[in-house]
Amino acid sequence: MSMEIADDCIAARLCAVRELMTKRGYDAILVRNVSDLRWLTGAARVFDSEQAHDALITESAVWLHTDGRYSGALAARTDRRVWQLDQDDVTHAAWAARHIAASGAHIVAIEDSVSLGFYEELQWELQKASVACLMPRLHGDLSKLRMRKDEVELDLLRRAQKVTDAAFAHMCEVIRPGLSELQIRAELESYMLSHGADGLAFDSIVASGPNGANPHARPSERLVEKGDLLVMDFGASLMDYQSDMTRTICIGKPSERQQAAYDAVRRANEECARAARPGMLGRELHELAARILEEEGYGAYFTHGLGHGVGIDIHELPVAGKRGELPLDEGSVFTIEPGVYLPGEFGIRLEDCGVMGSDGYLPFTESPHELIILSA
Image (cartoon, rainbow, N blue to C red; front, top):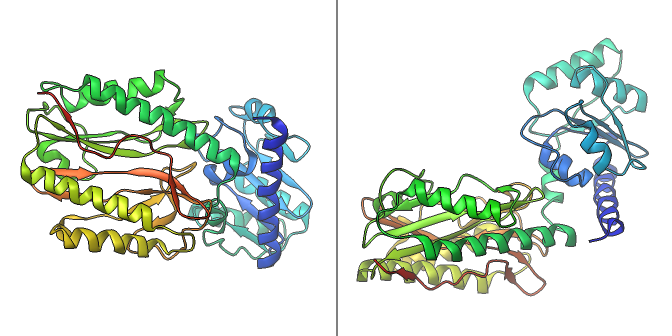
């Protein structure tokens, strides 16, 4: 993918932010959230969990503050014609106050995620500089802008999913009775990291037998046994973009009870994927899954939201759950992952990730939906 295309995408993102500023009446936006910074700068494989950066965006300039641990990488991976990069040895609040004062901004929107400590320190620094400034919250506006993925993002998401699908196919050749959940996780994650992933999207879930009844079970030393259902929820990361999928497999022939529950979950997944249309509210898609599982007799055992947005963050907007009031617009990427969890027995989840196209949902996931039965 050419640098020109990447530059066009970054320019479009900054343009969208400035349109938001005009609409809201902001003079500037102060950005500290590392996922928002990754999206705005296009700088891949730079940002980590530390809030070591600040960006101030006005109508005429974009400043980016960092430190020596990141400055070299940011200098190489950002467009220096756009981003004014520095590593001034001052606190983040002092840096922000200095640039707010220099810009003449008096209404500076800040992200909801900034800490109370930073907010109060920034107020103090502005007061010391005799700057009168209103600081309204953004109320998730940048997260909402990030919902619609551009072609650069969609390419990375598809590539990350290909690694994840390949890992599942590999694990179906490896898993056997006697392996522990921890051993399976180690092989799964090792495969992804050695076959194209540059990171893990999240801590993989590997849960067998009754452990699978806990949707976010942590892998344990439990050994996989004949007759187990095994839930694997995992994803590869590529250039800071994530994949996410879940498959449930059976070790040996499933019981009628296991197969019936699996068929119900599969029906919910596939009917929701067919029903999804641009503009549908996230909660409406969740409610469809809940109705299907209720009809199948498992309504009480579907205990989480149907899906969530995926991109730079493994959980981002939009939300396809009970409180999903945002529309699933064209270009939004999200999961469809119904599940059934029978305490003390087993759990089942079937998760795909895909993009909302102009006519409906287009999964990235290529792994099959039928229950895969491994020889015991």
